[in-house]
Length: 430
Image 1 (cartoon, one colour):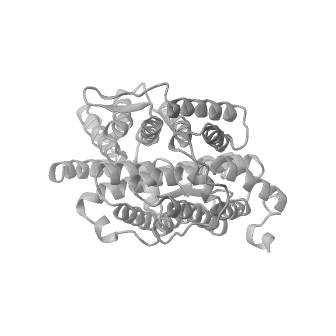
Image 2 (tube, one colour):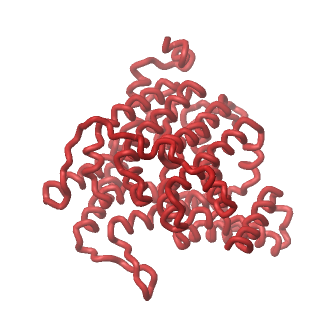
Image 3 (cartoon, one colour):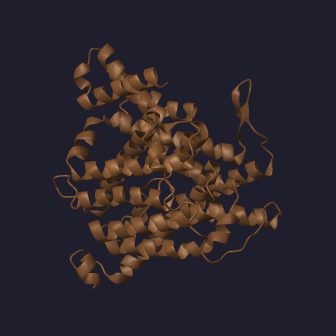
């Protein structure tokens, strides 16, 4: 049965190798089951229900990828978009988390449509590489700010907007320790370095009496408080169009980039640079985003951490299926998730931020008409506390600078249209 489903022999692999690869991938991305609920709790979503939704959405996403695309690529709620969901849409704009879920669901529908039609290639090819890289780096900077805020390293200040907190406080010291541990373990290629760092900080805090220990295993918490709670009517308001497109663009670019990178890493890419079964992978990702919103979590997307499983020999969807099963087993770890303080997950956020910020190295710095919009895009996200505004400012500045420099031929029609729409949005709505 497994041979028929996943074509193991044709991919020169076996069941044992695929299962080991699945375990490897799960350990490198399992931090999301602790980090995602803590982030979405900031949007007033019930922690236990989000924990269950995170595991279920990740499992469903992995199963879709396994059976529709037969790739060893795992999915889970994406970092960056969960922070935008909680701190941008809900915290910053004042919308309810139900409306935010509606925006995620609608973006998933649009993503599914453009994945089935040839629109995806047109959009991806239309956006200049500098803006794509800047968006990824900007999300990284956005995550870094949230990480340092959760750790108490950065605090509000009425005179200077922000300042550093008490650097000798327990959360700050533990967050710094956790970050150092994660970076050291990842440098040494220790499997599961991120989750190990989170757990070490948590154990130290519990032993020091700074955090209560709720246990490790228990029956899965109810998913009912967040299941099918998305407010689609609220999400269809004119003022939320930018939010929907922010979720869509980031998922589209992140997913496409991740799939291409993993296909190259695993040797799946054809000699002409195309990726076989790409449509199935994109449909899996877009469907996972929709289902994740229905289940009760932010955008579910492909994880670059899947590279660890590919390096361990994963070649087929059996690897992704194994990851999905492990996420279902993780449902029984809710007490442990509830025992982890925010300053223990902050180092994981900061580490992911460091990885995402390296996108700036691929900006064409020798061309100021490419570099300037990229910088504006990247710094606007943390400074406005909004991924959507960063994307909007990036498109507007790119089109405006290119036209002012007399290089209007560099502006793709899609970029020009979006820039005009973003300008209209700011003029009409604010």
